[in-house]
Length: 79
Image (tube, rainbow, N blue to C red; front, side, top):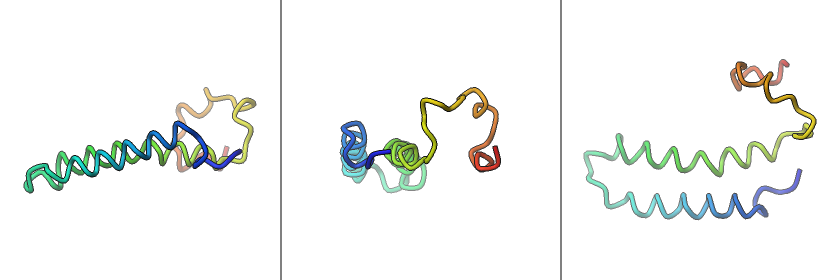
């Protein structure tokens, strides 16, 4: 699959993540490990998931996605 850094959706998600990190700097100090952390992690997971998807060696069109719905991610390599 092609390099994820060249995808427009990854670029937009990455920019959003950088903006969220910048904006959450102003959140109250007592929320650093609560709300701030949760917002940052949820935002950062978007470009990370896109990059992970691009790294898969299988052809996404030929996959039967229904078999992955009930299988935890850690066990995907055993299918």
